[in-house]
Image 1 (cartoon, rainbow, N blue to C red):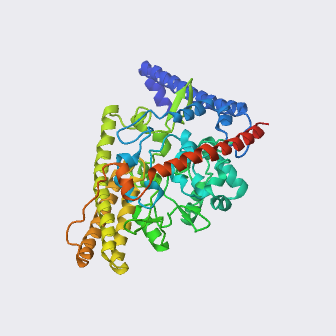
Image 2: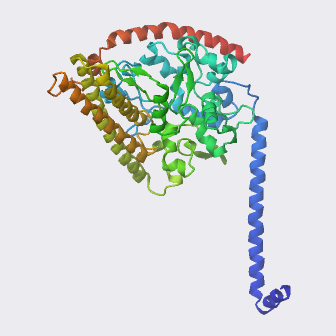
Image 3: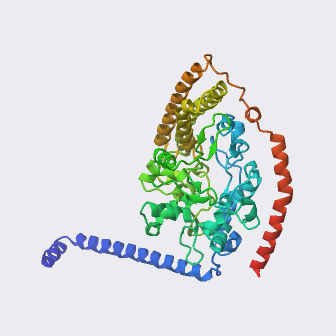
Length: 492
């Protein structure tokens, strides 16, 4: 073989030069690759040599920021609430004002008082303090996803004791906004899970979350909070994810029905309602991006380069405010085209959601009329079951962020079943109403504004707002004083 090659080179000298050139190029590329590996290793070693020690359960984001300024500065930019997309973004949106039907759908529940667009993580503590929903006594479980102080306090008290405490009792402890501690190990900076509910949900499914890949963890750290959950136990209020049967709306509905879980009883229709929280991870898991191995962070926290250093952008936000770094990494269409594609899907989901809301509002009001006309529990039982399922399926889509874009096909399917269930309820109601002498169509009240809808369900909003303002002027001031004393002690 060697003799043949030499013969060819002697006959055609250019072949030898070609082999020599190719060898030089290959060696050069291998050298560059090796140098790059060594450089990245050196950068990593240098970075961790420079990191100031961070205590276990350190909640102060600024302490982490001294070591990771790029990540910290981009995290601080979640304070920005300017960006508004067609259907969301970070801007403050009063959803009850935009969709007054929601007030009726949540009659008898704190969400009928206040429901706003979630702003950036930087505002998490401020927003939960300010909302009118926390004027209603709440368990400490409601703090679970609002602060880096939560893992610290859970470590001190134990998760069970944390959950069964009162929300108002922990206000001085929970003061630092969502941030570094929630997702990172302070020694290795590896992604980690700090909320036990996620770990426990996977354990019940027979899965070990510790075996997750890094790419999977780039979604699971988000799934600690951006999920559907409920408070298990009348006194315990133990944070639990209803995933034992699966992630779909149908499977979670079956789970809830089997344990007879009720979030609230509707004050008009007397329906035992299931209130969805924000099942973003569950909906994402039914969509094409999850099927293709894309993580939450790929779109909401894309990589950036600055000064030759590659890092994760911690401005957790809508990808529509950063299409070039999120969507266009995979999709080669223009920013305008990609935004148009998103809005086309969201518009259709919002239209279907509106159909479901209209049908549900009518069902609740017709059920109220049926009770007033003398309907019996036996007559209303199947009606209320249809309303319960219809509202759960509507809310499973409506409560999730993205207006269905995380999984538009599944969102459309679930809304279709919501509309079907609501209409089944109304069909049964028409028979019950007729049996009790109501043969004309039940008139709808004027629900064109939030104020009118709240007045219809009996809320005295001026009184509720005044009570909340009085609370904000007294209790949080004491919380802040106690928190400042503790922060000062930690610095020493």
